[in-house]
Length: 214
Image (cartoon, rainbow, N blue to C red):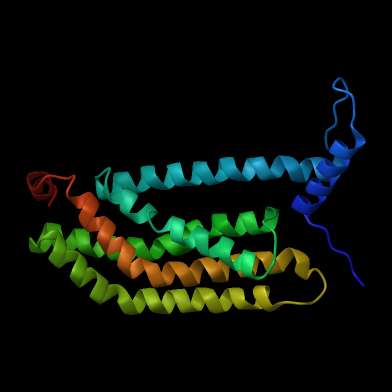
């Protein structure tokens, strides 16, 4: 029987043993070696996630010439992250370093769906003088097939990782499970949440400002 303990489980066992040992207050413990590097990498992952979001927001803000539309694109991330966590929970896999990396990968994968839709809607508003409602309706209709096809390809490409049971699957499987779960849920919700966020946040931009950007 093979016993597999990932970084989080190992740290929980260590902390439990530390509490049960009832050490004096002047005695401090910390991780060293591979365990220390794994513990440090978890905090680094959070910083990388935040830095990636900030960089994406700045780039999209420059491209769209707007401070509002990048938020619409970023609004797809909660559903993708929740889908990844839910998939890990249902498969009884813990959130470790590899699944955290998968969540970072989801940033670029799921946002392409929203970018395709929002880019089409903005172009329709500026060039065809459509209302936000008409523009996002046409964008959702025109981009439905490309979004569906690219999402299916991404999900199928992650399935070998999720279904792998060979040697070393403890590292690869959480990545595949998190990717599949995040992609599935975001694919379902993007076609509903993105148009809603586009119309909601679009009210913050005056019509005269939108006209001036055409």
